[in-house]
Length: 198
Image (tube, rainbow, N blue to C red; front, side, top):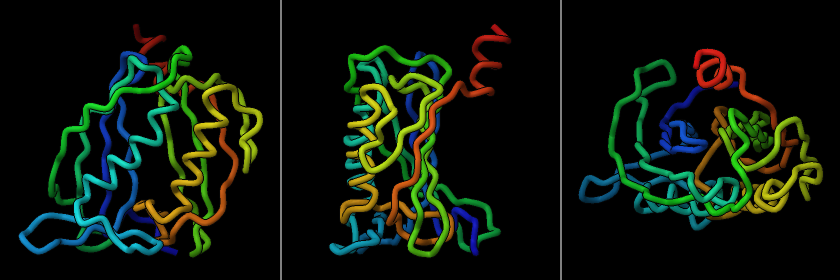
């Protein structure tokens, strides 16, 4: 089973809790007529003619997890010629999308959620410094166990990732078809960087 970002990935740069973060998600890019880049969708309709449309649709859904002082700044598109090759930068777009929650940011936190793919692998999505309290477990499909805005946001995120607007894949190349648990905790690297080393 392949465990690679091949044939490409999107890197989203955002600021939450006053700290810069990066989210990386596997995609299947293709070049459109005129030289721009699009993204395949796992379910018909089968593509975004502009890769930035797929990222914008995603950020519009996930912004509900983040306090209004958070900001999704830019997204970049990268391709790989083979699973072992170095990534090649292809394009960048400004986002300028703010978070949508009035709940307080959970400092130095992470929310991790998994999805089983139709190829048998996992798509794991990480969110740093959301407005969801740490040390919780959300059980699909309602993600009960996550404080607001976690449960409602995760229901919408799961629907997006399993629906026909999604453009993200697991590292095995499969599309997400089943929701797994969501977990929150203090992120050790963030705690070390922003608390212990302060």
